[in-house]
Length: 182
Image (tube, rainbow, N blue to C red; front, side, top):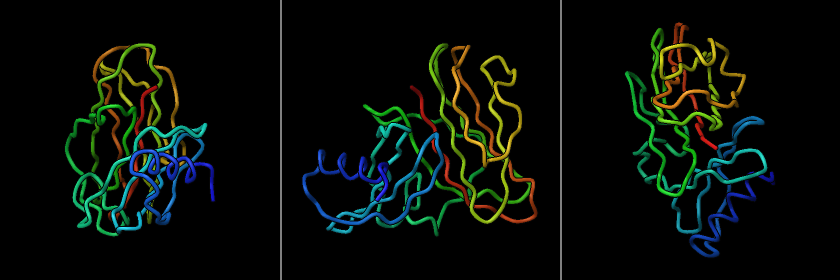
């Protein structure tokens, strides 16, 4: 079992006791990892882990897949438009799973401060995606790059940063995205 999965299991035990269970899936890169767990009672959780491993967030996912993630990746909701990202109290990151239709994009808006570090990790399933990051003044923090490349860097402006994920392909693509601030 990976260090990331073990960190998530330890966090689950610290919050809810020895509930038993299993790791359903794990995806990510050096910058961040999404671990999906199921406890002994059948409840599913998403856990975002930054390198270290440090748990950035652990949250329960509804059994019917509602919420920001499907839990199993098979019934991800279609992403579109602009969505504001707000972290749960006491956390410094979030993870979501969604599907991006062909020739569309989704914009995630995140308030952050000058000097903080931003982590973005996009993992696509079944197709290629690209993403870019805009500063609050509209200038580019990160020009368009492949979702295969995670981003970790220090911010130099305070305000709303925009992470735009684009699907220029001819078919819908399901993706996982982890976003964190340190």
